[in-house]
Length: 268
Length: 313
Ligand SMILES: Nc1ncnc2c1ncn2[C@@H]1O[C@H](COP(=O)(O)OP(=O)(O)OP(=O)(O)O)[C@@H](O)[C@H]1O
Ligand SMILES: [Mg+2]
Image (cartoon, chains in turn green, brown):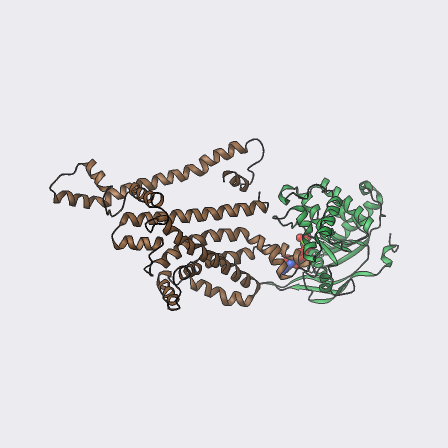
């Protein structure tokens, strides 16, 4: 299982060294990230998992240049996160769908394209294509409130994909959904990843979700937020849902669980 | 309007009941309270008219040495030429005469005077709303403007408008500008404030996640303003415009008082009080109130049109 993966031979897309981030709050400073060393290569699917408050969102936001580290270095696509953001290197999916309530689904998906100055014909083409990709064909004219939570989240994924980024940063995108919808979206996301080989950084609380989706799982622990362990997880590109019953799957899940427990016991 | 109201009510408008429900709610939840309050006001008004006009009726009776029966007293208090408080039907009759029967081109038509006041109200309101929105955009985008302008904006409204309205009129007049513009300026001075305050709040209302989203698209400040902040501020804009238009009307009327203006509802009020024509004063007042109500309702309709286009359920 520790054999090097085929994809990991390619160049690093994200490379963090000794990354530190301290939030200055009204009372005590919060050490959200401490000594983060992480290299993510092109085409990898990396999950960040760990207890609440261990800095998963913060790490993702640093990669996205939504937060500035207070120490260490990080590069995205070989440049600073700021330059990468300006080059629209990634699509970011928030925990909530963050759709604009006054825009239809189609208009929401077109939003980043409008900002990028892409012409109307191309916008329409990409909107249609990505609506189909997330199984929302025919819902373009609906407003967000007319869709279920799962559909809204799919729309927000379509919006991120419309930018056609090489990298997806996803912060618990399925966290608020029920198990069945979540399974379905996990399968779709995996297919999408297998087909496009985008680099995905994926934050989750769910061990099965992490093991099912990832090529590598980063187990984090809190106070200060740091990387406890990185677990390779190569179940092959073709993973039907029932792979979750196989011994290989369960063995990796157990390792993740042990890692989480060890990381957590630290501060008790 | 009832149906667009239904649209704005969450949970309304689905299933078997909407028509029934909108009918019922139109009758019970909207019309009934309004009618009840109206009847209450009318009752109090009549009582007040009897109470306040009775001394004069007794005076007249005493001078001609006659006794007043209660019925006589009642009819006397409601038919005086210059009552302290005219009865509602006297005001209604005067309004009917001056609005409907007299040609709107006549100087005695309330429609004519309303038109004069309305034109400066609307000009001042448009200017005030524009100024308010521009100020709010500046304040939201610049900390320097936020710190330097906001205190002055608030101070501007602590100065009693009645005190500076004559100054404004005098200053404009010294430059040879009279009529519409000075009055519109006073309306603007009053109406920019609620719009500026409301829009600062509205433009700051998008949540952090939506702002972060725009940042991931490397959106410029102008794009974020146009695609996120302004749409999010629409409900705030309309709410403050309702306050703004009503206050604009007040501004226009106040602007007509110190000029000795010959036209406008303010001029009617002034003329009425010179000659003790209380019925004329009250009908001008009621017309102003009706005008304000109509303006607010028009903005409400515009607001519903915009919000329903923006997909509000
Ligand atoms: N803007 C901020 N200002 C101050 N402290 C912050 C800020 N953002 C996050 N923190 C703190 O940093 C720590 C890490 O937060 P983060 O949101 O990254 O955790 P997380 O792993 O994503 O947790 P969860 O699983 O609950 O989403 C927490 O202690 C949090 O309180
Ligand atoms: Mg988080």
